[in-house]
Each structure stands twice: as C-alpha cells, then as structure tokens.
Length: 483
Image (cartoon, rainbow, N blue to C red; front, side, top):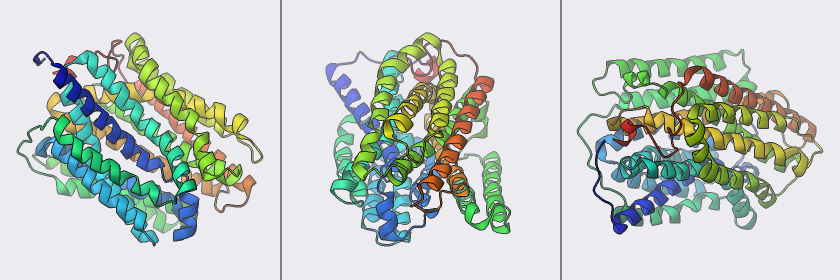
C-alpha cells in the first residue's frame, strides 16, 4: 500500500471539495436519465413523438452513455482523468443546448445522444479521480463511496422532481438548459481542486468502441420496435441478431488486440462478474420503475408536472438517508453480499407492490409505500455492489473497472427500459387516455421489473463470494483498491 504524506488542512479541504464535484458529476449524469420523465408528455405534444417511440428520448442518452463508457474508461487511463472529466462537461453542455433548442424529433435525439457522449467521458473519469484522492485512505474511502453512491439514485429520483418544477413553471427545454451553468461551475472549479493525473502511452480501440455501441443500439432498437413490428417479424429478429453479432464482434476484437478497450482477463478477478451482474439487473429494474411510475402518476392519476415530481421526493429522501447514514454501517457489520441480495429482493418486492396499482388509485395507497420499499432495496444494494466491482480490479485498471461497472448499469438501464416498454405496450399502454389500459400496461412493466430484481438477487447469491465485513465501501476497502 502506498504511504501518503501527512495531510494538511489545505489538502483535506481540496480533497473534499473535489469529492463534491465528483458527486455532483454523478448526480447530473444520472439525473439526465430521469429529468426528462415529467416533461415527456409536453415534449411528445410539441415534437410529435409516438407513445412507443417516446422512450427514445431516454434511450438515445443511455445507449450513447452505456456504449461509450468503456472507451471513456480507457481514455481516462490514457489521457488523464481530470482532462477527460473537463472534456466531458464541455460535450454535455453542448448536447444540452442542442436538446433544449430542438424543434424536431431527430434534433432532440441528437442532443440527447451528445449528452450521453459527455456523460460517458465524465462518469469513469470521476470514479478514477475518487480512487486517486481517497484510495490510500481506506477509512475516508468508505465515506467517499457513501456520498458518491447516494448521488446516483438520488440524482435519478431528484431529476423527476426537478423536471416537474421546471416543466410546471418554465418549459420543457429548461430541463436541458439547467446543465449549462452547472457545467460552467465545474469547469471553473476543477483545475483548483482535482489532481492533474498524468496519462500514459497506449492505443485507443475505436473498432471496439464502435461495435459495442452499435450492438447495444441495435438490440435496444429491436426490443422497442417489437410491439409495433411484431415479435415474430423478420425485422425484429434481423436487427436483434445484428446487435448480438456486433457485440460478439466486440468480444472477438478484444481477444485479439494488444491493447483492447476491455482486457477480457479482468473478468477472472473474484466477484467482478457477480457485482456487475447485480448492477446491470438492478438498473434494469430501477430505471423502468421510475419511468412508468411517473407516467402512472400523470396519465392515470392525473397529477400535474410539479405534483408528480413532488410525489417522488420521499424516495429521494429515503435514498439519501439510507445510503449516507445506514448503508456504510450495515456493510461494515455484515459485509457486502448479504446487503446486495437482501436489497435486490426488497427492490423486487417494491416493484411487485407497484404492480397492484389501480386505475382509480391514489398516491398514499398505491404509490408511497411501494416506492419507499423500492428505495430501501436500491439503497442497500447499490453501494456494496459498486464497491465490490471496483475493488475487484487491479489499481492500474481503475479506469477500466469504473468504465465496466458504469457500462453494466447503463446497459441494464437501456435494455431494461426497452424490454419493459415493449411489455407495457403489449398489455395496453399504447395510447394515453384510457386509465384501465394504461394501468394494465404499467402493471405488467412493474411485474417484469420485479422479476429482473429477483433475478439479480439470485445471481448475487450464487456468484458472489462472501467478503469480510468492512469491504466494498464500508470504510475498509480491500488493500489492493487502496494501494
């Protein structure tokens, strides 16, 4: 383990200020997946999206984000994390401006994809910076992970509330414009508090980046289009097979390149695969939950944009309390595996409860208790699975490990939402205006999300080795992660 010089008040202050920027980055890139939720009905009316294609406002961001995260992790290792962190904010701001000014569907989706590219540069470099700042201080690393971990799901749920406020009192383009001043603040503050971090020589695997992104996009497109074209249609299966073939080509490229985008041998690290499976299935359940819950609140219960955003605030508060105050203590006492398993089971139970929502229901009975149970499950599972994934890799592959775990989460988000959108459409949620049909569709999506969460719990139970209490984010990370 590297021995650090005795910290001074100045270096301590800069380190925690840097963590604030890192947590803000995580908050924003995840918030951008959800802030559009409340604005979707107005965007649909203004830009002409169909009910089925509306999910592409989300997917255009997540496909670019998830597909390019491995490239972002590689660039973080090669060019230096701070440099890439700043570049990502520039791209995110440009995409936000494009999305806000959009007057047509294709311009909106272009802006959202650009936002995803910026997020793919920010997210892995932010995690690399966190490990650089706190990796040699195991006790502080646990606190840093708690704050960073809370920023992700809090950003997801807070985005819904902020989207409601902005849509109600301004207009939908401002859900994108809000990123621009934040980006300017981060760009001004980063050089003063972030470690510069020297890059290293190496090649960039553009072929790998193109094949994995195109493969993910094709798979999501096939699943989203399936309810319209038919699950047995040649178009659905040809596009889906093309996506699988591109992902297989990505794996083949990685096995042959001297400096691949993703070294395949990294998957032999204990617990890396299990922790990433947990992150993937967690996101595949969590993201559809807030997407369809927001539509249920607006299109079935008739809440306005502000009221529907406010209705999800209790989830945000529960997540912040659980992740910052309780989760690190529970990990320290019980270790990460039990919390991941219990958390995913609780998330699945919350989804099942939401599937019982009624067309003539109300917030206090049909939404609040189930959403709080889902928030508790997410809070228990997120930090230990993230910490386990990162601590499983070698220190010199920190950018790659952070790229992989972020990719798992975003790929799960995209594929989970695509699949649940298809299920909802197949069970009646095609056109707004029929509360019974919409509720049937949303309930089917919640049931599908519950099944994914339970599958994640079972996968974690079977694949994760039992780690000592104190690992994966509790404040006593494994020594190789702190080296």
